[in-house]
Length: 397
Ligand SMILES: NC(=O)c1ccc[n+]([C@@H]2O[C@H](COP(=O)([O-])OP(=O)(O)OC[C@H]3O[C@@H](n4cnc5c(N)ncnc54)[C@H](O)[C@@H]3O)[C@@H](O)[C@H]2O)c1
Ligand SMILES: [Zn+2]
Image 1 (cartoon, protein in one colour):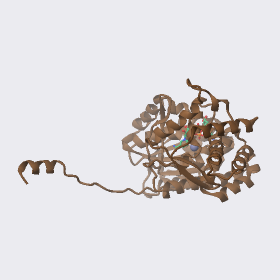
Image 2 (image 1 turned 90 degrees about the vertical axis):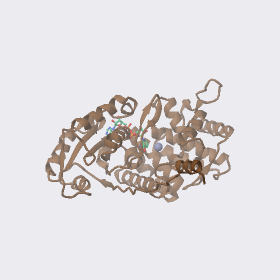
Image 3 (image 1 turned 180 degrees about the horizontal axis):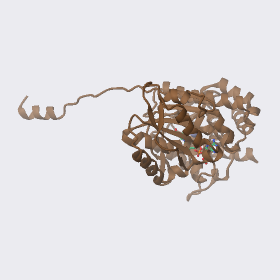
Image 4 (image 1 turned 60 degrees about the vertical axis):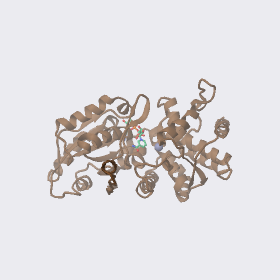
């Protein structure tokens, strides 16, 4: 080997770096989480360093604080009652709830500012009490401030308790694109308090149930049958049924994230996004007037019918799925589904392209092979999508 070769070889030497990091976090189900007699929150904060007094900053969704007068004081009283283990660095901050907090970067800066002003460090805690949107925004700030401070989520909607709040993602929107900016960052802990749901508007309660139907359909036939048997109770928000629906749905999401082999979504398969390619598009087409869960219910119905048309699912099962969704309170049609683009084709079809782009180029869509069994496909036929759409339209007449 001459000197020139030796120099080149030295330049292209590759050291294969490799390590893995284990994440673990408790997802707890409780009631009256800020009752001073309930030790759960203080226990959770102290789980890694039991002898330390933990510094916390708290953020509360405005919709929640309005619906729960006295909540801010209760959080302060809780911290005082558990002063040996925790300390609130300031009175809780109220933040706007709903999608608006994710659509204006101003709010991110505001949250960062509070963390800066109160010297929140990597061992301090951010407590976030709110719906999925507010948790997403606070989660992004917590994940990026000092490259990550500890986040304890206290989700207050059905959707956040059974899906978004128990997972590992956060994100905000930019230029009309949902979740354009975000990270994968597991929380320190999640505390689901069912009592928060008492004040949630019925429309929001119904919307969150779509994710339970979704995950039952791709993963758990027995859970689907359970949802059918308890549809009356769920439709009237009976507490025991709601509690179990949320728990089982959250559990199935956690299992997928923890045991599915791809918690940070490096691959293009995304089974938990069953029914979501059209749902995301419908949400955007209606500028959020259709709630995420409402759009997911329609997306489930559409892809179930598509599965039948594609010969994957036994005919009749799509009707059974639609009947359950309607029983829970969903409407399975919206005129925006057929809103035409410049070429006369429904704009909804663009949703498939956008979904592929989001996955990173390769399209992988989950469809149904049976109740409780998802199947991945690499393409969807436009003609069959259009037929599935007209089936939905006719059904809704
Ligand atoms: N990070 C993820 O993995 C993930 C997954 C799915 C959805 N999401 C996101 O979640 C968001 C939707 O969240 P959502 O469905 O929880 O609704 P939301 O956060 O938009 O809240 C809906 C409304 O309910 C109010 N509210 C919340 N809790 C309440 C309560 N207990 N009582 C009264 N009012 C209450 C809020 O102030 C808001 O006005 C979307 O932005 C979506 O992108 C994130
Ligand atoms: Zn969803």
